[in-house]
Length: 86
Image (cartoon, rainbow, N blue to C red; front, side, top):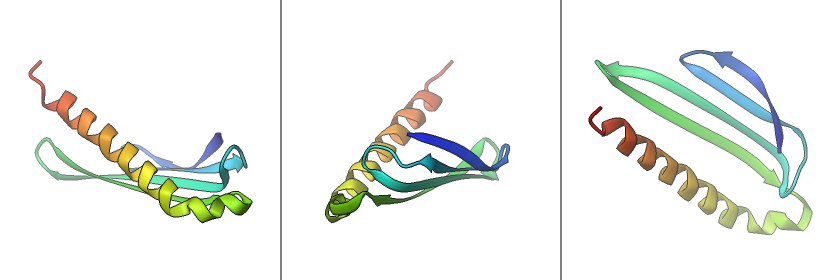
């Protein structure tokens, strides 16, 4: 899957979109927003949008579930790593 940045404003915002349909996706976009909510605390918001190719659209709910589970797992792993003592 090939994407390009459509917005990049470190350290607050990054957004990408699919440049060429590939694999399961006819369209795909994602954005990441980071907002400081206190000393050493950051709230991260991840938003993804996608359209599956042709008849695969019937599986959009399953694809949404798999993507959500994958992102939540990565965030749990990141949190665990960041909370470890140096």
